[in-house]
Image (cartoon, rainbow, N blue to C red):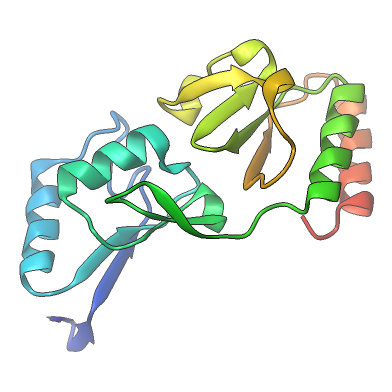
Length: 174
């Protein structure tokens, strides 16, 4: 336990982009030293990130020797960093992801899905903003147990506006 501003803390949870890591996606020595100090004070350190576990987060957990479960994929999965096992998950309902997938394909909208520590995109196209990962073709995905879907910017304003209206009306739970 550590005392900060007169309060006792047993755990510290950090975002990754711009918090744990800089724009260059590295962890500074100062941050590493602070985390090491927390750990020697029996304070659990973990991340909560929109990123999937594979790649950047897995590497950071290894680099920092983190052992506590990590919150990934926008809160959809909790992963044991020692084994890479998903120990708890809440996925997009299978019927919803299928309808959403079909809608986005029918509108020819670019999107990606994170699943099984991979990023699925049309033609396995890589997106540097998503960070290092294994990329696979959307056509190879099994639409079950999907934690996260992202829609890329829609260039046609009319299609974008129509899509926004449909998404809000038909996918209220998402």
